[in-house]
Structures are given as C-alpha cells and as structure tokens.
Image (cartoon, rainbow, N blue to C red; front, top):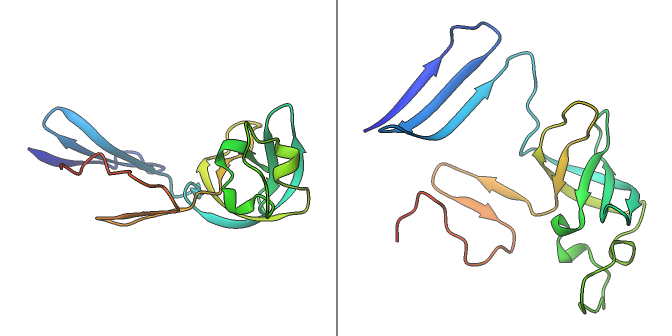
Length: 143
C-alpha cells in the first residue's frame, strides 16, 4: 500500500516521505529558511580549468564557484572538429571564459562548491526530459 507521510513537528523543517509497504521510495526535506538550489539551471562562466582534477570551476552567481567534472561536460561544448580518440584532455575541450549552461546536481556543503552538470534534465510528474541520454528508463516504469 502506497502512503505519504508528513512530518511537520519542527517549525524549521518539513519532511515528506513516500512509502510503498515498508519500502521508502522518495524523501523530500524542505527548510523555509534555506533556499534549495539542487536542479536549478544557470548560465555560468568557466573561471578555472584544473587538469589534475579533470574538472573546471564555474562562476554561476553563487558565493563559491561550482565544480564541473569532465564526465559531466556535454560533447556539444567540445570544439568543432574535435577528434574523439581515447580519453579527452580537459584543457583541449573547454577554455577559461567559456559560457556554459549548467544544472546543480549536489548542493554546496561546508567549504565545497556545488557539483554541476551540463546534461540538463527537467522533471515532471510522469516524464523526465533528458538531453541526449539514450535507452534510459525510469526506475518506477515497468516494461
């Protein structure tokens, strides 16, 4: 039996859990004083490319710059005519000052900036629109 459990005993936090029998399949925690940025989409500028981390740092308007790993950079940002032989070098793929559209995957924590991706996804009640991700199906969809 599917149920929605709501915990609003604390004034500073609201928790909503969706359970199916004894299995938790969704949990949402909302704090009115804390603005959640996860899944937000921004236009940012690459401020630093770090080859040792195989990542770039992106200024998208937050206090700290976000962290964009090479594996989260869409090939649409690669230069025209880039040859895809072997593992790409991040210094060849993107440049400082380049503009990118990013989505926040993980919130800022402690002294670390947010984890970012260029693979934008928009979620609705029955559908998730994902950019060029082929052959993927939602976990809750039975064949």
